[in-house]
Image (cartoon, one colour):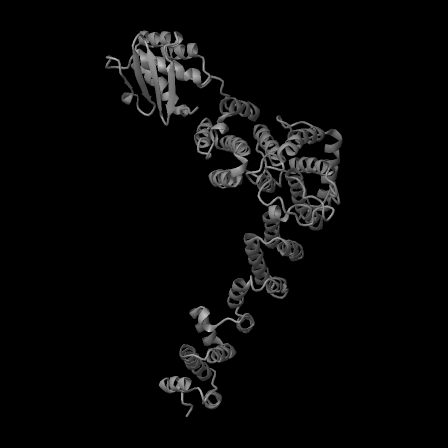
Length: 598
């Protein structure tokens, strides 16, 4: 059932407390206690109901402005029937009507009615959210619109908090709402799952963008113990969601990678999470779950840092230090928790709710073996991320090859972008080859465009290492547009002209601005292109073709003159007229264009 936002409920409460005599409020409470409010419904920001005190009265409570509330009884001011309907609404929200009566008559607010305070931790807020909104996903029969007011209301509780804590509260709140969206999608009609996926994904996309914006605003490490407690709780929730096989709507693995990429400087938490993922990966067949070096060197880290990191990791495993709700638990407990939360769910619903594209696999273990489940894919993706962050690019690519390429190609593309930003050409070359090999088996337009963009950027940064151009040439004709634009931007006009000849492009199909640029800088490069166009037009054996040939000849004349080859042009046009002397229509067009060759 729909419900009012909390600020509107408070507004109704204050209106009753300030505008209605206490005896009338008590009378309304008595009507409610006597079962005199048989009907109550919330539509938008209005509560509708009926109150029977011997005669049935229709009552409306306008939560935006109490002055617009109405009742069919003779009373002109706020009446007891309105109070009775309000108490019935409070009951539907799970509040104690007697306590509400005390608040209205004696003062106070509903803030403490089961809602945690700022000092309470993330677990208390998650429990409160589950109790208050845990069933809202059942209302999402056609869309996720019922979840939007839930998000607004839940976020509203922290609007007066300090900015850092408010951001953490919102990070968890958005995840809780996204989990509700997953439950709604899992409960949708399987026969129309594709259409539900389109609708639900479109609604959830702004929430995911908002979550990423909040993440980027957070500091790279927690500022104090309270902040660390919230961050660890959100990290555990995010991991469990990514490993949940029933979740097939959203890209939780991308959120997971974005989270740990942002907090890569939080060394203790990264080591603990990496150990948890490594333990989980041990159960996947064919996966080399262990890192090449437990103290793998971070980019830019000194050997002393690596040694201390390895010791810290060993101590963490030995002591069982990891993150639970309060920030101090055990790695083994985290592994067991992750397995318990997701293994059963994966076997129960993974086949029906795999993420889009998860059915196709590139390099699945065992060659012809079944592709990994969504949970295994998430574990391998996380494993690849931590290997990538530690500088083990070969190990990261090996883990990626065991996942469905269509599902993880976007993450691999981001790894390649990071290598480009860091100026690591050798690592970039490995990732570009990984994308290239995967796209040979599974075509994905978005990933292919990303590959071409990376190839162009690599060639711009390392012009002496022609990896990018070589890969784009292998993708012709799909890469024609990108390669042509790249040649022009780099001033490689001869390569650009050769590409047009190789692709059989006609001059009229080229951008006029590009033709003017090349004609100005190197007109001789366009001569073969227009000569071929003239021959093709003449072979058409029609008046329209002859006219096109003459147009190209006029352009050729200008190019020869610009190149300083006037004599060569006169010789060519004389031979051309002689060779085609029997084509009377062509000869007429040549005379009309004054191309006599004299």
